[in-house]
Amino acid sequence: MISRILQLQEYYKNKGINTIRAFCDKFGIDNTNWSKYINGKKILYLTEDIIQKLQAEGISVEWIRTGNGSMFYNTQNIVSLPVYNIRATCGLGGANCDEIFELIENVSFDSKLFPASFKSELEKCKIVIASGRSMESEIFDGDYVLYQPQDFWSKEGIYIINVGGDLMIKTVLYDKVKGQLTLISKNAIYPAQTYSGQELDKVRMVGKVVAVLHKYDCKTM
Image (cartoon, rainbow, N blue to C red; front, side):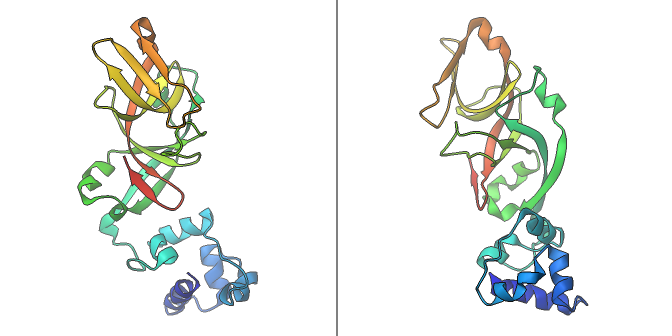
């Protein structure tokens, strides 16, 4: 990765950022450890601050990390999605939780991380942040969960559901014959929850999970 950081430094040197301090300041890198990074005596970690500054310049974080692709994103492939202040599962204190989502940031990423057939669906998505361990090993604490808003049950899958004011991420099974809805966790230590009859009135669809962004990769559902 350091070799690519040096390539990036050379690129910006030609654009007038001529000193190590100026380069490090631009991208939030600790310049006091620069020589240790270069000599392999200290690891340069890509913090959230560094990643955000790289992305703001249109620089591919994947290229920085792995060398794959080009230094700069093709802006035609960039998708920017809203991230909301909800960590599922959390108590929201009301049935209309989707209406009180507060935008906290926008996340931009290369749509080529996803299958080409999925690109047209991405712009319809929103993001919430997962909390807890009930959906491991599919979804982990702190993951960005991409969902398409919808207020109806479709085929079996992972959904974001409002249950009496609590936002949950669960696998949903719906038995039309029995009129029974079952919410299942991926982590076996969490029991399934079943709703039927009048209990179904407190369950509301928020959206269907279509992808999960882990810390270093992504997975479509």
